[in-house]
Image (tube, rainbow, N blue to C red):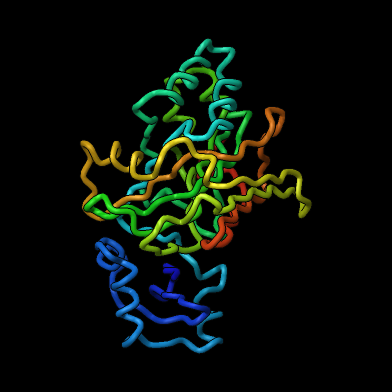
Length: 287
């Protein structure tokens, strides 16, 4: 089943039928056995007509599926990500760092965004004006409740300024953390079971309406388990409202590619749907 955060409240979709859920987002999602709880709520929830469903789930009505949660991210969990990070860091002499962390016991984990810096489906994500090499990074994203239990999944876009990160590995926060540097959506797919290794992840990048990059892979290519990543994140961090964890980049555009303002990134993950974001420059900041 799918939970949508909309401008008119929370909508639960089950088998193409939509229901209104009258609970605050943080209270609703931050529980164990979320799928069972939602199934019980369907019995008394208001069912939406087809027109009401279309209105509430229109692209311009969707918000990112987040309230007071943080977003964290895991790095170098796919071989393709390791190779790309080594490539971008050759000039700084730090390329061996990524080879080492790929094989290390401890994963790379870093803070990505507060809820206020997150874009949803149909909303713009930003590229930095002081970076000359920018890419979207499609990532299966876990929702983990306060008890450290995975309760759902969403599609994530971990925007990256590769020229900044490649200049010096210590610049990772600047390359990763800035206004609208993350997007999640279009929904939270709730499931009590693992989403499955055969789950496909696809990235399309469009420019002037034409696809200029496309590729896809499956979750099975990830090196680490979800429980392993969550276990390290929750070792010394508490999340009162739960958190989101991006599980790593599995598709990387070629080295000569960089995003331009006006491009469109489409990230499609089986069972979840398609997250679409337009690329833009932050209008509040001068060049």
